[in-house]
Length: 368
Image 1: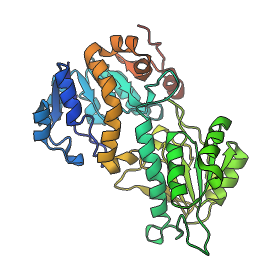
Image 2: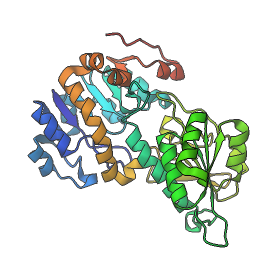
Image 3: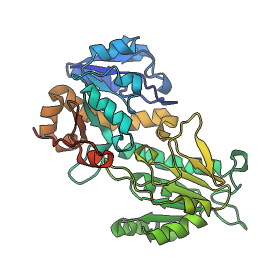
Image 4: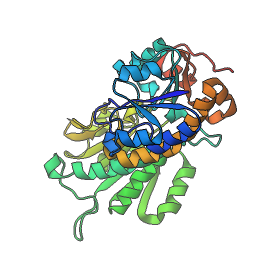
């Protein structure tokens, strides 16, 4: 198969879909690799390194798409990239379609088959391609929250861990999957007073065991969320429902009652987010204020630490890339149920039920 790796176009997105090691492996498998010039520049990998790994460098992104059968990206395609997709293409990337009607319509119109990293799901329910970026985003959410609580970034001027004789910052984390747990780890490590909120009692029990008496755990309901949010200096939203929009658990009214200069970070904003006042931002303009509360809602947080993120991501994506390249979507999905769960659009038809329900689009069952 001919596999194309374009340079990412999303604002300040420095990650890349394949590392030279992945290129070498796929070339060894017998595939032809086309890499757009400077695709790896954001992580310090030059074109010559890709050439030595077995890739051909292509300077024109349109030519790369025209010559490729499978496109391996990190983030969802922008409009100019959607225009380059054709019915014969397999697109393999993060998509988060449930929160983006226009993107979904564009991909369906293109007629391509689209496999989303975030909905590839193992039989035990885990999301192996989402976990590494959730870990990065969770850790960064606390780190970023700490920075924006500083006076020089418009915050209330409180240190997460405080110092002897002063109070520690109050941090609430809503949703305790991979992202939320890593946000908690960072907040605890920095000495904050942490409250973890989740719907799963079993998960709260696990967190109690993991962190002992260093955190408070609360069952997710409107009363607990409201009380915790209002009392917090930093609120981190980390709610994820695979393939679906996140529910709005934190309301504008709750936000308005927080102390001025407090901070909210919504990790899942690319899936709609769980905080009503949040909207996607970019690394170039990452924040905005609502009722004096700083909102950090960058939709590709891990792109800011591109080297760590690319290595963590491609460690997980290469397995399914090899399967898709060897067998195609249909045979690959028949062989691997996890990969089948990742197929969101097949030959222009929306085949993921939850996305169809969220967007009100026709749903076509994926049957091979």
